Length: 162
Ligand SMILES: [Zn+2]
Ligand SMILES: [Zn+2]
Image 1 (cartoon, helix red, strand yellow):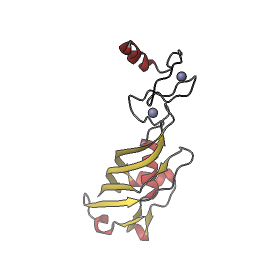
Image 2 (cartoon, helix red, strand yellow):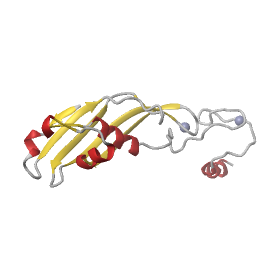
Image 3 (cartoon, rainbow, N blue to C red):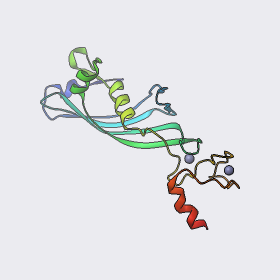
């Protein structure tokens, strides 16, 4: 997705507000499956060095809980702070088009998102996981296995239940 930045190109500290939806490819390496476009609300500011981009990314995706292995819907609003010039140098991607009058933000958004999203997804802080012996999802029901829970945080809960 390209945006016209010609209005702020020659005026220091001038800004453009951006409010857009961007459809990102799923990331098979990270097992990230975007269920809807990422909504971006950001401001581009012209600086001495080029442009800053600051705002938020509203992301929804299908994730799998690492503890109970259940699929769930993950939603978060992630802050975005980047420098478009540095990005161009670091990634080697072409960011500016039409003699610097347009900027292409797809890769910048994607990279920022992938760096900010959690490495592991947890459906709920209180997720009880699955029983390692019988495979029962302990969020749904208890099982009669006597094995100790793997997660130390569950020990607290266990004492509490006695
Ligand atoms: Zn879970
Ligand atoms: Zn069990």
